[in-house]
Image (cartoon, rainbow, N blue to C red; front, top):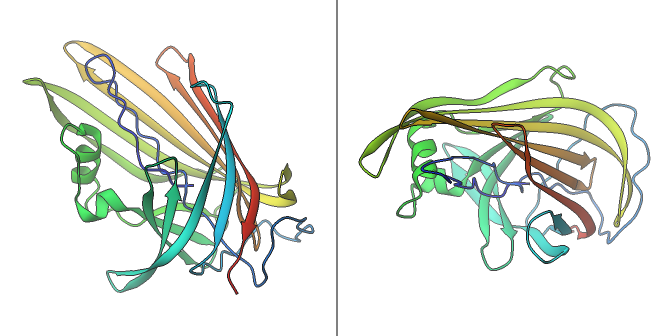
Length: 258
């Protein structure tokens, strides 16, 4: 669920940040390729993360010529960050694998995108550099919290500052919030599951040369107890509220390490 943030500065600097789509993979105590998760009595889910877990997805996008693109997520190791142990979650998306560090505390999932932690920014990637600078001290980010009241959002990041674009200054404001939405039944190729839903919303506003551009993006995460991420549905809208793109990723199979 955590694909890396994406820099989309179109028309001078139309910035949009879409947080990693890949972070919430969890696991149970047995190996399973598909199946049905029985109903749970509460909306809480546990994420016993472990090295070796693999989840396979099909993603369908409104962009591009390919209707469905298979990809996988795998926990490949652990890393100690500020005295806390995080699992390394690798999102193998085409030929560009990305890493996110994930930790669970109670019913809360905390994440740190690799590029922000290690300070590696490609030349010209203005938004990543901006987020890296503005978010220092804010990590880890709370992405899922099933102890939070339903439909009451919390702030993940609220940052504002300047980006230099071709010798001029762009004013940028970035807001990311999370919301716990409760439970529902979800059917995907891997089975039918009782899932807990979380919504991650991002808004980027860029003021440049007297004009203001805005893009909103939303991630709907559906997570099954003892299984992990079952579905990710993403949308992006521009300042006119016109729908730019949708992506729907569904779990097709999973293997949980012993």
